[in-house]
Length: 381
Image 1 (cartoon, rainbow, N blue to C red):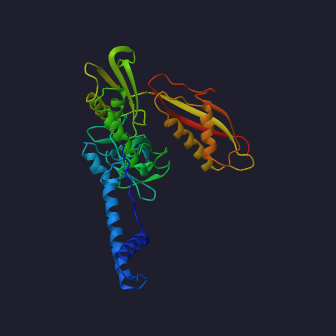
Image 2: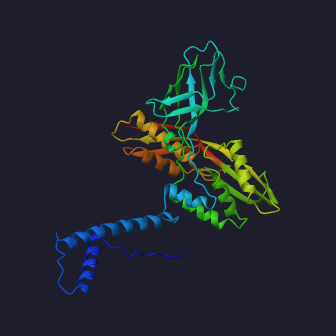
Image 3: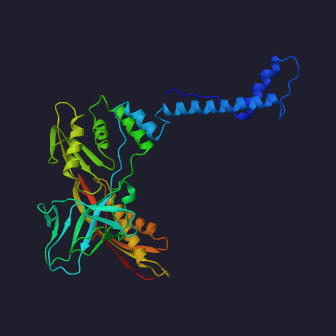
């Protein structure tokens, strides 16, 4: 790697150098004191020289991937056919409810709900696996007698801004006949900002090193270029059923939800197919999901805990469990650590159980852990 060192000069140094050059060529003493005509000319030239230095630095900065940023970095990478990964919208579940469930009600796909302050909008998404999905109505039909339904939504604004807390989506933007209220019982997740400059540079390095190799690194780079936030496991000499199979490899992909869409799996398969070794076969599958319920007892000492303290602990533990990668174990001590971090006034954590047992949970291969019910009880305080 070539390191370029520029000998830059400041305003005073430029004036001193010009004065020294002029005096060395003159036969008489030159007046360069402040206010003199020569000093004014020197200062004007020094200002121009500083501007030229700044322009040179800007040109050097934008012509190197290690120093350029924003649109300049995008333009630099585009010469190699690489583009920045866009932001990913947050997604989650909201509950639509009504006071009088005597008649059927329809929630069309694309219906907008908002946060209580109206700053963020979320659109109802299609999920044909939901029991009340009705393709003919292009939406979800709540039958008579059903007071509420949990439906998927996606944030209209991509990025981490959509990862709102539980209980913040409370406004139905447009009238939905027969539906009165909406709320999100759990936080929304998986919203990711557009790829940062540093992450873009790091991915470019993997892109270059994988161009001529059909290796796990090349396959992993191809998958990471599909979209942000993906977690993968690549198992060589393994068939789609997880059993040994020479000449095949298995790719397990998770988008953070545990249930990646068929469209995402298809996109990953297309990316893998472009870099796989000749003569091999592969399968792209979602992970198996293991739901883990957590229970713990907390003690706040002499402090009287509020409902927000308990909610913060529940949310922190759920975020930890949902953030585990494919094959990662759920640790009891980590659960306790999350509780302490969520509430600084917490005095003690005890009786931590995962799925009813006081031990860590090690999932089976190609399995990801997701949070079930997090129950927090108090002892004292």
